Image 1 (spheres, rainbow, N blue to C red):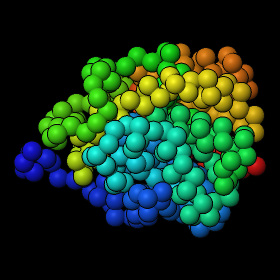
Image 2 (image 1 turned 180 degrees about the vertical axis):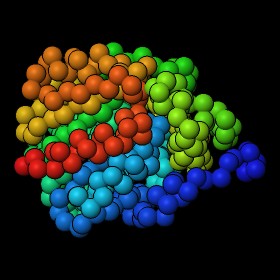
Image 3 (image 1 turned 90 degrees about the vertical axis):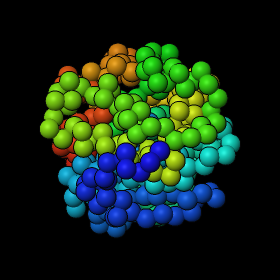
Length: 306
C-alpha cells in the first residue's frame, strides 16, 4: 500500500502517542500512557478489539488531575509490538494479555486500581478480577467498571468481518489491508447519533491509524480468534461476571451495539442483582469514544470506592 493513500494522523492521536512510553514486559515491547498524580493507586483501563488505548483518550482527558490514569496498548494493538510470526495462541491470548497487565501494574508499583474494561478487554478484565479473587494479582481491585463486550459469547452477533476471519487461520496476512478496508471495520458498530457527528471521520481515522501502524492490519483478523478462547474458558469468565464478590461492579452498555447486544447486560443484572447497570439508548459499541464525558463522570463518582 502506498503511503499517499493514507490520510495524515489527526493531531489528537499524534498528541496521545507523544505522551506515552514503551517498556519491555514479558519479553515484548509494550506501549502505555500514564498521567495524573503519581501514586500506587490508579484508574487502570483495558481497551477492546479492534481498538487501542486511544479509545480512552477523551476519558483520560476529562479525569484530568483527579486520579492517576494508566492505559496500555495490548499486544498486537496500537503502538505495542505486533508480531507477524506465529499465531493467535502463541501471541495474543487473553490470558497472555492479562499477564502483561499484571506485569505493567507491578512495573508501575500499583497496589490498588479502579478497573475499566471494554469489549475484548472486558474479558481480560474479568480474568484480572478472577485472579484477584484467587489472590493472584499484584493489586487489589477497588471497583470494576465493565463496558460493552461479548464475554457471554453464546449471545454474540459477529460482524461479517469477524465471521470471515474466524473461518480462516489466525496467522498474519502476507500483505497489509487497504486503508479503506481498515476504516470499514468500524462504522457499523457506532450508534446512528455518533455516525452523524461532525468529527466522526476523524474518530475512524484515529482508530484506523492505530491498526495501520507497524503492519497491524496483517494481524487484526487473526486476533478475532479471541472469540474462540472466550468459548473455551466460558465457565470461568461468566462465573466471574455473575458472581464477583470482592469489589463493587458497574456495567455500562450502549444499546445500539449490533455485536455485544444489550441483552448481555440484562443477563448480568439478572444473575448478579447488585450490579450497578446503566444503559445508553443513544450509544453503540464504543461508550468511551462516543460519550467520554459520561464514562469520565462515572469513574470520578467511583473514585471513593475502598
